[in-house]
Length: 285
Ligand code: SF4
Image (cartoon, rainbow, N blue to C red; front, side):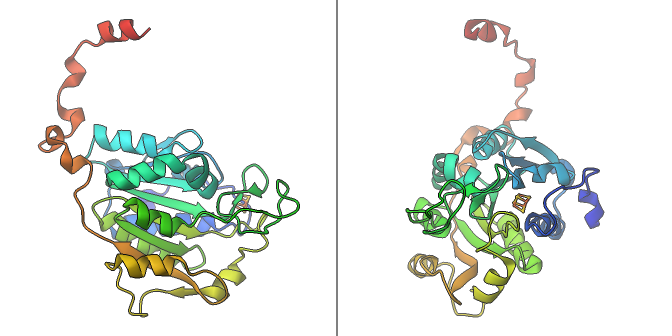
């Protein structure tokens, strides 16, 4: 297989320099590394700049509603657990309106890979404050600066039961691709939060800022199976101390593993397509 297996005829139209271009490359590279087959893979998204991602990768795809990528991804996984299901959201989509879905998907441990392109701003709607905007950040919706503290995705993932929690940076494609591939190899819910410069609406979270301040957890002696150590690392942020890499991982049965009816074959292969459901549909009208 070559990377062209995942090439879609559609070309992205993000702003020149947008971090989403690198995330797309890293995703395709990870799919290739993980020997994923386009016909066995589904990418689901919500609404936002990054949620256009499924258009640009040749797999099955579903662009859902704002904040709803995970309910759709979970339903696809339950209907056909032989598929590899990936969800992509932005920080507004995933950590704002979709936050409740995220917490429940993590505690249920669906075998879903969730990539959140985190640019700390609502880009598609021209630059309002998002749930990960830092305190004091001035945007058109907060002209005097954000007054609340931001969501901490890694701390949230560790506390909510995610079995793979990692943070990557769009400016380091190779490292990011290895984190996504790690999530694809992992059986269970993986959250990969990606520091994604929005070159148009975020003048704080720039490539230069992250290049200067990120450090890799690999090589520091960090043990990703140590929950307390992972939580401690999740509290780090600021000058020269933004960790990227795998924070935490554990093995736990997935939600699908706990459903006996789909152990031998996926729900879609149970022959329910031969059942006449018109009576049921009539009742629901
Ligand atoms: Fe990327 Fe920001 Fe432009 Fe959206 S607005 S395409 S996130 S640079």
